[in-house]
Length: 374
Ligand code: GDD
Ligand code: MN
Image 1 (cartoon, protein in one colour):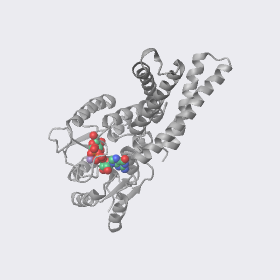
Image 2 (image 1 turned 30 degrees about the vertical axis):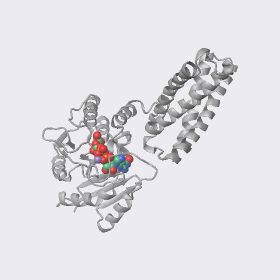
Image 3 (image 1 turned 60 degrees about the horizontal axis):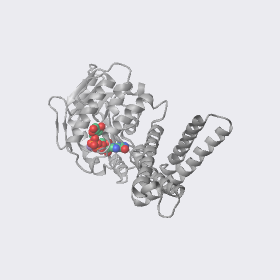
Image 4 (image 1 turned 90 degrees about the vertical axis):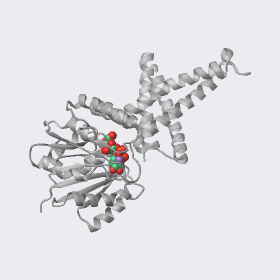
């Protein structure tokens, strides 16, 4: 009985869905030697424990529990690399993908006529049950159009999370996959060099069984980050680029708040009460800097570190305080290094820019380690 198919189920908080998924796989794959690899990112609901409990009675079930990591794409890649089966599938564990499609996909690949099979939500004959909000369908259509341009492959649904391919095709290029964001199929299409013969299967994208979706908010953002990572991530790491972009936006926030403080709050002639002009300015600028720093903290927490997002009042306040400390040290680095460079006779503008770059690197290194380090 040679293993023919590995099924990767990336999971985050899918404890209640898991047993049912394995039962449905068992029913759908009758007569086909298969294994399932649950790749769980240490879900707080105990998905990994549940997977191990199932595996004790069914050795076709394997578990990879990742600690301190998050991400659907990277989980899928690790799962796919972990199977000895010649063909591997990735699908959602929440019952939105129907396992009944697996035998047909497997037949397409084993026939030797196709390298990759995938299930499309937008092909002729597909349907979506409770896909949620219309804006998400729109976002998905837009993403599809861009994706088709990027990969040069015309697929009706390159963002699909349900696909199957020959494992050796994946392994040959696995080291070049970026593993960022949710668009793993797209990443494979854009990365694998051998021309792929693809077969599309229309699917009925069912409603999620239990629990909630993890990618509602930022599909489009994740997608753009994925594109960036693919093209420029090697030159300037994606996380640093995001951090830098947020920092640059913060500059405008600070200038804007400063303007508002001086013109609207402190009013006429920029003087407040019996303060002199420079005190007024310094107070206004301090407020502006704190607002900008808070803005940067929130944006970094939501976007740059969405995979390690601090949640709840306590952790957020603590993170904010650490970020404030980091930024103060960054500011010293910024101003200090500019002063040193200027002292060495270097051009003012160059010295200031070098200070900004060094300060940012410092901010990034510290926040990366201390604020969002765990
Ligand atoms: N290991 C791991 N780590 N698994 C994750 C993570 C993570 O950080 N985030 C989500 N998952 C798992 C979920 O537990 C589920 O099994 C599967 O990945 C899909 O996640 P959902 O949160 O249910 O995604 P969705 O239904 O909103 O999104 C669907 O559409 C996307 C395209 O718009 C899925 O089909 C995606 O695969 C697809 O890319
Ligand atoms: Mn889902």
